[in-house]
Length: 238
Picture 1: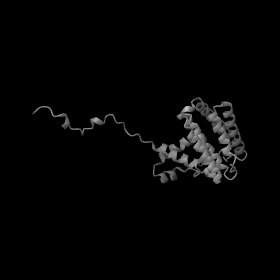
Picture 2: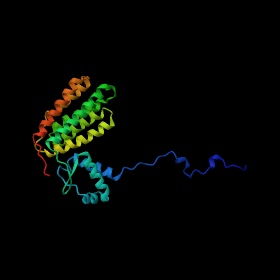
Picture 3: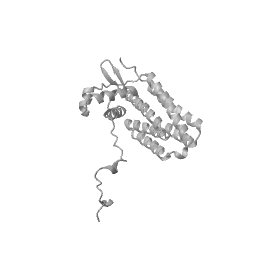
Picture 4: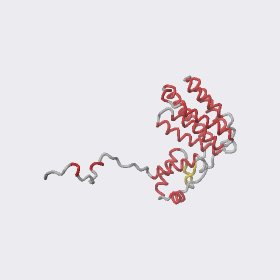
């Protein structure tokens, strides 16, 4: 039989059937570099006051200087780095900086707590319970860095439980700034036996749905941390 070609024999190599597929999104190099540097600041591999030299970073990462420069600008905008006469450095925080960080952190955590208590059925409480258990185990191990990470994770999970991507993003920067401060005070701020009880009070208050009790628990925890931190932070050199 002559005429049109049977549908089963139609040439399917032209790519017309792939029109619905969207291009794979590649993260800009500067964003990847900023993420790596941010993580290094948070976990202490880059300490407060460390100079971040463009040429050295570009060579280490195998990239040109342009995305490194852009990444450093991102960190400056986030408050994690600062430009001085001799270049860009991991930021050192003053008492005023720390006070402001904890003011903003308190606002974020109170907002998250309100969201959690308004829709407790949407919260995976086991995630928060597990974060508390991890903190208890870290404190028992007497491992300072493990305790700092477990403390940070509890607060991360609390804010994430609010279900607001923007609040979570804002809070991540504040936690990074907190990490800088803790790094500055390493050796002075290692008493942590009180942490599990403070965090347990926050979680218990959240689960109870008592807003007044929750706010008291959050504020008490933040005020205590702020008092401990600002008692030893020095003003950085110009």
